[in-house]
Length: 220
Image (cartoon, rainbow, N blue to C red; front, side):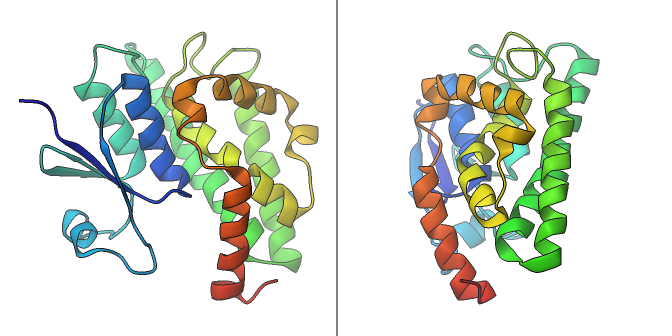
């Protein structure tokens, strides 16, 4: 019996994009179900009753929640192709650490840039630059974060690339000027079909956020 795989997601979600990239890397066929986050489906609420958030991966009727947990699950279940986590225990722990840094620093600062103004926005912008410089330092001169092969930390970070236009426009700064190696890495990732076909269009993300700022934050 073939696996039944469903992804509850939202086109603009960088967290959902992580799951999309991982599934594409593994060559897994799945059904994409777009969720309206302003009017969440009963099915989403049933599949993720604790957090009530996307993404949710449903594998043969069983839900898996939280993007990094989903990526690890995908890597474990479909382990015969394109391993994402290193086989070495220490390297695996390090990969999880840097993915956690992305969630705690890049994600939080990014929202601060587009959802605030004035001093709060400037603080968020500084935090974003500092976080990206930390990641650029970890990347060093490597092709990908794990070395020669695209892996877990790359999957965790690359979806934010299609949000860089939002951060730069509302924050009035250039990520490339501050972190040129990181942009070079991102462009290398985008050469992979699993990435380029899974990420949202930056202009559509920008239009979405313009609407979000007006509707929920009263910002022009």
